[in-house]
Image (cartoon, rainbow, N blue to C red; front, side, top):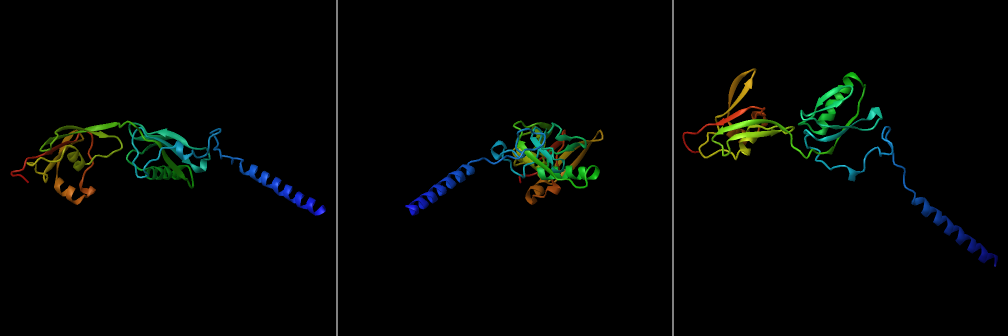
Length: 227
């Protein structure tokens, strides 16, 4: 009888221990909270963030969060302005359009370490990509392209000479792609530079391919014979 009672007591003890362990596994973990954001996780769950290509360049209207780790005050939400900048008190305004988050964070870190921190760790994330493309200017194409006339430029997306021509449907069969003229206003006077766009496209060398500016005029002359 005593042997039976001993075995029964052991069984009850094991059963109760298993029940307690099961309940303890069901207790949710505490979520870390950042100072300044009552009840908010230090880093938002992935489903609340838009997944963005890390190589995507920032553009006007993008919603970003900047975190200076050493501040321990959580993220600073910002929207990239139409001019392509964000403001970070007290260091001022940073031009970020056309840069990746890594490049923009590095610029901010350098400014902070120059004037405010011995060492700064900057995190910059895109929370939401702007659904609206902000116009940054217009260039005008004429001559031997398939779609002559104005072409809009989008903020944060640098437009190169060869890209503008390709967006205009490329050259006509009578074009002279070796003598494309780019006219730009510099200090109130028009300056014209000639480019061999055929060579630029064939080589794919961006150093030869100028970035266009608002008001630029592109003319593709007619060749003496078809090419």
